[in-house]
Image 1 (cartoon, one colour):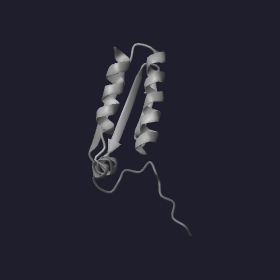
Image 2: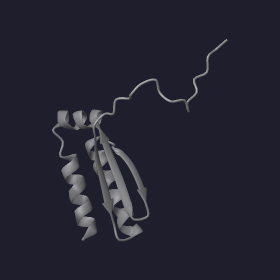
Image 3: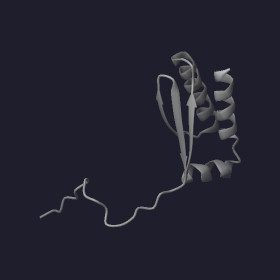
Length: 92
């Protein structure tokens, strides 16, 4: 008989949470949000790095986990600085 794990069951102990970097960028319109997302896609393609992204009509959430931070540090990447600059430019 195969055991089936109940995904809703409480875990048997504390789970380790890996450190993450999180940003939330808010924009005045969907057009600004969409333009930022398009620029982020270009940046990701250029850098070869794709962070976790979620978005709504006038906001974008971006998360980079510990593994992603290590990957960016290895490349000596300016990804996060460029990302912040794109958002600032779009909001002006």
